[in-house]
Length: 423
Image 1: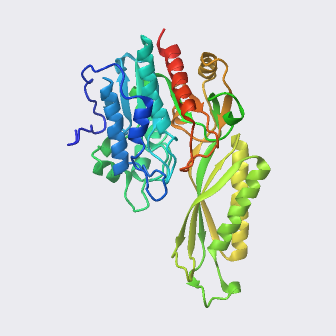
Image 2 (image 1 turned 120 degrees about the horizontal axis):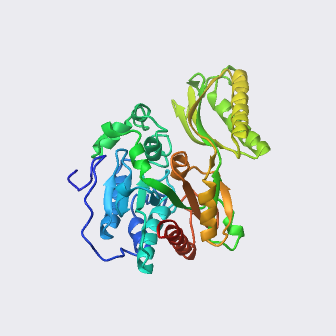
Image 3 (image 1 turned 30 degrees about the vertical axis):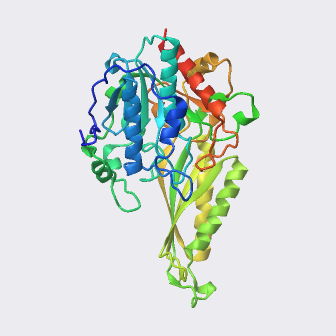
């Protein structure tokens, strides 16, 4: 255990002494969590894995667990669990999400699910519900992948979709490895790896999340159920040119990778639009990155998603071909590396349909965003609830959800947990 009371990976704290049935309200939790990791200049959040802001989020999670008399546990991969009932009994109903963010992200993506989960447990207790199965709230670590470039690290490790060796090779922009970051934060990186014993405890996982789109905005429903997650992945494009002087090198003598990159961005937009898919270059690095220098290297990351895997493969292939063709004209070598890929996720149909029935026939809709629920779906029955987002904006400080819709989300999640765990 670290000096501030955190457990190293694999440790579990004893159940807290009995306290009042309910903890702080949804609004009180939201208010307390809101300042953590918020950047004053942008108003967005920078809650990156294994940083100070992440530690503060973890401390907040532990406090919420112990205030409610829940047993707080940190697993071998740094994910946090708060248990109501005996975890070893198995067939548990688990809910939760994540607390980390993309760079300058919004307040709702991830935290809405965690705060709503604690509030839903409070609602169950207020109703006098008697769970016949263990219940748990989970905070999965490093879901966004903002620091190490790979999304859902905590859940991928747990589910065996990311090997310990591959995880140990992950580096941030400063060259700090994942094990180094974990160790500096007071956790044991030697313990990371698949956790089938833990997954065997879980009978169902339900993740509540703010909708990342506007499908519900056109309906009278504040809450919907997910049907599937589009296949998606990340590809690194390296455009190798030749550094030179911006003021003395003739245009026809240049091997400028920025030209090839710019044309590839335009090609990605066109190929995705024609296929009904999505393609985004949202991160780029330039060397030597001088105002008066022709670049020698442009490194850019493509995020692409589509309704099916064949369409996704076709779109990415066409983008790569367009980049290579343009590179030949510019004297630029193009190399493409797939860094991650998540196949299409069809949530368990029986669980999905049961949730829709418990909530009175709410909309069932797909999403293009990846989630921990999607990673776990290969190991345990999973489902998702979406809370209406009036603008559809996400991964931005403008991300929002109406207060009444958030409350409706808590009620819907409590209804689901009661239907699944209280018989």
